[in-house]
Length: 267
Length: 342
Image 1: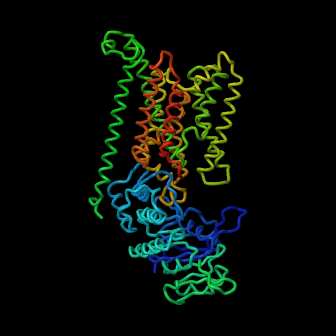
Image 2 (image 1 turned 90 degrees about the vertical axis):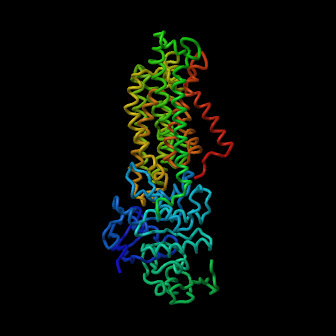
Image 3 (image 1 turned 180 degrees about the vertical axis):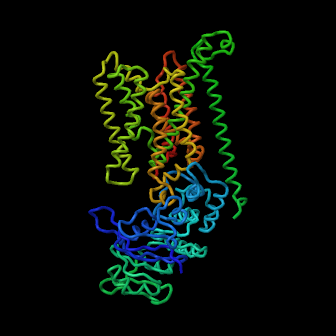
């Protein structure tokens, strides 16, 4: 199986006096699969995503994309390979959905170029994929949280990236919209793309991912297939709380949290 | 999906936009013609066409006084609107204009200093205004690079506020030191803004800077949408945010510095016109910028024509634009049509 992202002993810190946000991570992320980077808040998930994007350059180690063919942040290339759906993307002015989604064509347009009919066709295709084609004319501030997340996904898909990065794609969404996003992730995989997303919710990882990477305090605690990696022991070590896994060993296990008294506690 | 499956409404909207742009262009052309024929010579208000053929002085007034002034008004309005739109997109803030980054305050300080300390000739005042406007941008950028909090936009806004405050204090000191009978009225009149002194020479000084800057802004206008996104998203789209912002800011500031150095402080155009353009033509910078330039040019042309013809004495243009701009601002505010949301 080819490798979408290869990290080799990658370390990164935000400032010389700050602790390492990511420490000595060596990891291969498979192409054509959905990989969840799972861990508690502040475990370095988003930093890892930004290292893959090329927004941050590692102080130590290296990151390579698509079997080493591309380096993150490489001018003119990287943005056609990697697309990002950030956690929250405010739009400063009242762009309509189509105008916003068309921004995803930027990697294919020169400094003085503007989107053409062909770019609009790609944008409409992306809107179709996420199921909001009918909303193309709506002003972005009038969208609900779920619709906005779908519009952001459409904007990233308009980039036609090989690797789609999503930062906490379901964290602000209700159950129905979270399920919709999971469905879109699975649909995106059918087009041969690689999906990498961060989440702090083990159930979201179990629902959408094929592979999972467990992170805590900037380090990788474990990585592998969902059914093998999402075990009570590994999850309890990651979150520092008692966790049991229903349907353990199945491809889509269900995770349940327990408080110190052993009582079930699911948020 | 085929290109043909694009909804008809998308095509219809593009046609509608182009039509509105042509209408605005037509109104501007008509405004220029009317402004050429309005004035206080040979009689009040309208200059008859026969006068142009028979009266050499009337011909000279139209060609050598009104014409350069009208060109300057059109350029001034277009530049202030284009730079206001650019600033608002780049700073993701609908309440900023070229007054940010110490540009306008720098020009005001430079002009005041030239009037008090350097003899006050027109060339020196304009040169000093342009120089200190650019120094305002340079100081704001330098300070922003030294700050260690927030993203680039926040750092630049904070640095701009600081530099503007220093320039304002400097202008206060210069006014305090100025001769109250000889120099202070000159400073006050410059700060109020106006195009009464514009000649063909001034137009020839302005256009070689203004035209290339406006061309850069117009050609790169779609990128403004990208630059209004967060840095991480813009980066993921292949944008080099710092470099592109700087390129567009330099174009906006250079054009503003040149027109402000000729016309003085003309308030509210750069703030209110981009709002009107976005409301009437769409929020996409692709539409808002060229539309705003035409609206800004028309607005300043009308204000300047009123300023020189409405009364026997000229009203400073800056006062008129501020009154009308503030009224429009309140009107948008009352109708809840101002984009104050982030």
